[in-house]
Image 1 (tube, one colour):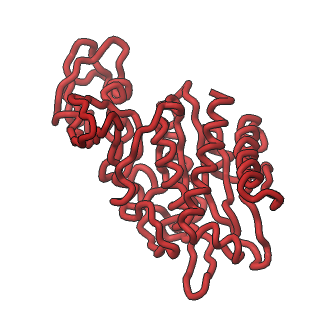
Image 2 (spheres, rainbow, N blue to C red; image 1 turned 135 degrees about the horizontal axis):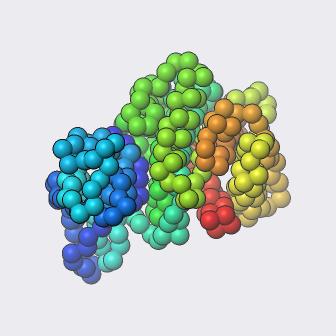
Length: 342
């Protein structure tokens, strides 16, 4: 579920009251401040998620609402009623199609079809590179400035939407309050990106890296035993004459990270062989001592999408259908990774 604080989560509690053939209806899924009974073994996290609410998003509100009913260290009493924070989500039903509204994707893309549950049980932390005071790599195309953080973020949003459509639980670690998915060629740069849950991104590079890594790690323990991946998306900056394919980094000590990176790379190889036979593909997989990869608890893959200074690579970014293709191919590789390792 996604509300105004831009938390992406796909544990939903859909109540379908009518099945309308050929018609379109919009219904609310949860009343305001309903009460539920805690079961034996429940903690706040389990109670919230069982009722379709984001623990990361609603934990503090739940505690505030129920502080007089909680035990030591905010424990729950089995059999006692607790109030749930109010939450309303729009579900569209058209000839059996399920749809949820996620505002972070912007007006044009906020309605998301729930296609299937092939990624049910998978948890993804998506980290678009840079943001806030740091635009990352900067290139130029004609009279336009191309900023890494804007293009990496757009691809990341598209990837998140794909994952959600197929049942995954997705956390956007870097997010922008007003930049949804954009089909413009030239994405206007701004500095209002924040870090999950709603922290201002610092200027200092090491503090930025620590901030987003800690954001991932704080959530990680809530999903112990689940399939979890941290995916960081960046755009490289090299000389104007160097055309590069998408390449992948993993932590040297992570065999699973290496395997996941190879699976993603192989998907890109397959796609280029299919769509551009004879072109060849030179993307690589290697280990690298990167802070977010080394220090993130979940298996991590760091991806460079191309060279923002190379004219041909720039087409990969400024053409929106190419950004969507990047997201689609990454998604397909991540499905393969999930099937191989769940």
